[in-house]
Image (cartoon, rainbow over all chains, first blue to last red; front, top):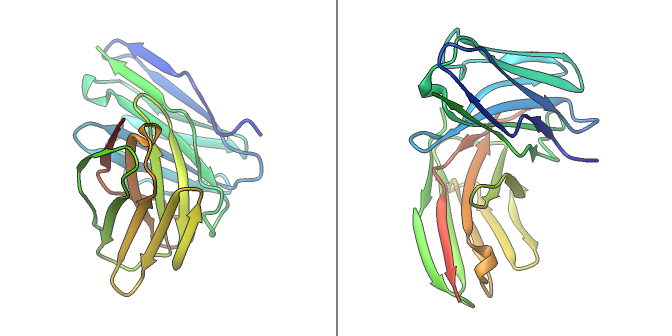
Length: 114
Length: 109
């Protein structure tokens, strides 16, 4: 398995633009997580899905952020409109439901909003 | 919400030294993870444990559930061990991780 695949690796966009980050979890994993890492706040959970259903989105900073998981092999995190304070590295991770075994992170997307 | 504290924040040591990184948390957990992050790189899961001790190569992780404390040890440290080591906990089921702020480890030749 190629691991958790995220795209793009780097994204530079102008303030106000829509940004879409993509994630392909490991096949067979049924829990998917979106995290954000900044220098100030470290790693934070944004949202997680079990069996494609969003379970906890309390970490999503505001309504500008939305996430979907239309099927077991794909998820998106969208920011609309983007702001400079959204600049961070966004990680996707997946694991086996309940056991947490096989917890695997993607390589991350470095987002810069100018 | 679980509070995860790591110490030390920064650690510089000489090659070959025995390294210990500590992690404490405030609320009962289902599992504790030790993660490694290299500069500019991704995050790798080193260990997931809920009791006792695990060993992988030169890395050893222990957890004391009663004391809500875990340690990560590196024996015979090497410059390639230089990275940020992050402790993270999960509360149960498939809920997400709560992270410590990380320990920046530098091993000098």
